[in-house]
Amino acid sequence: MRRIIIALLLVLVTAVPAMAKTDITLPPSFTQDDFKGLSRDLGLAISYVPLATAEPLGGVLPHIDLGVEATSTSIDNNASYWKQISNVPGNDSVPSSLVMPKIHLQVGLPIIPIDLGIVYANVPNTNIKYTGYEVKWSILQGSVATPAVALRGAYTVLSGISDIDISTRSADLSISKGFAMFTPYAGYAMVWIDSKEKSTAVTLQDESLTENKWFVGCKITFFPLMNMVAEADFAKVNSYSLRLNIHF
Image 1 (spheres, rainbow, N blue to C red):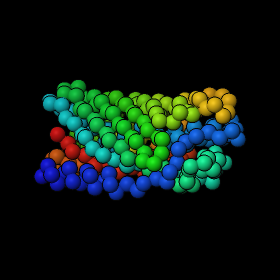
Image 2: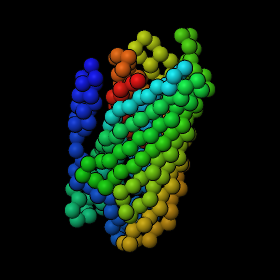
Image 3: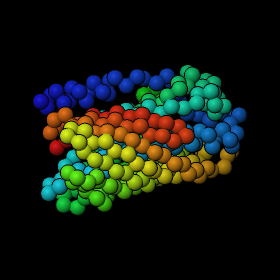
Image 4: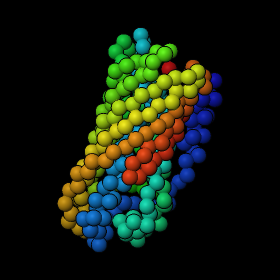
């Protein structure tokens, strides 16, 4: 069984399509509006994706969900800022979706209904990398008759791009209810994006943006040791994610 689970996790990773060669570099023609648009798109793309229900993972004993996931973020590659990045020597055309493979770990603490999480992404053929952290508190743990409700705080930080520093902070409220092997969930998040230009080619002001995000998803528990989660996030740029976990 363990070999089957590991094989399925590897299948998800290798099934993620490789992006065209795209290093995020700011050209001399970049304007403040271009920088704002790029900061919004990248900030929402790296903002924390829960891919989890409102129920706590832990119980009397701690429990862990460890898995691989992929997030596809739809962007307007005809926007001025993406076209300029495409024209940087050495880059291919920017695709209409940024596909990000990730490793995701969530730990449910024993007794208290709090989960801690960390996620890491390294996008092939780009200089996009980021790390994210979360704390989730299930204020209502749910029962056979009632849903679970949770509050989450999260932080993500971009690395690998020498021309830009971007970090995000988010807070969300979610609700979920299990039905046999299915647990649908939904929520609303506020995302705060902080972006700073570090390029030698241009001089631009920092950007601080506030964005709204809605999300819906479903967790499917196949076996006691394995589950899958699918989620859609709706904002000014939309994202769609799939995650496969080992649970223990």
